[in-house]
Image (cartoon, rainbow, N blue to C red; front, side, top):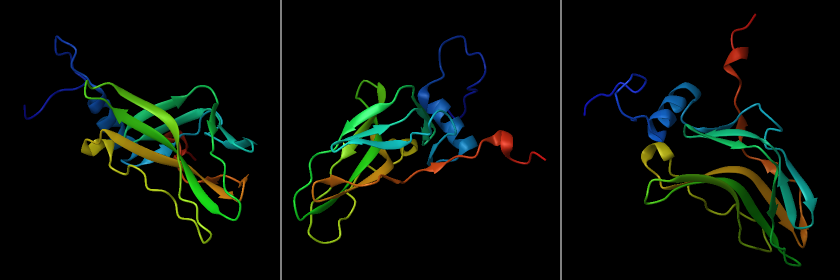
Length: 166
């Protein structure tokens, strides 16, 4: 089919997540952003091995993800004399049956005595058909056994209602 009227009545269910995702990406941008809602996914180091991500919403490649409650994530112990960068990402997954999910996960980095690098993550866009895609939210620096201050890696999207308002 060359064209399809997505927002018109078709006599059958026909609007899918790909349709809505493409529409939202066209309005908001094809990248990934945190929205100005809730706590804007603020990261707090809760203990030596726990980081809490606050409430809020994000859009990754047009897919909207809501974090209605704070989420605790476990950071694996560091090693004496070593440094490591872990990443907290929002991971989109699409199963073979078409079901889509989004969860927060920690991507563990590699320990080194030198300057740590960020671990690799899934960079393919959902808009390009990725079955797994990650949106980096925070870098978690680990020095020796200590979790450092989370480093924000996302952009906060300016709401359309504030653009061009005198």
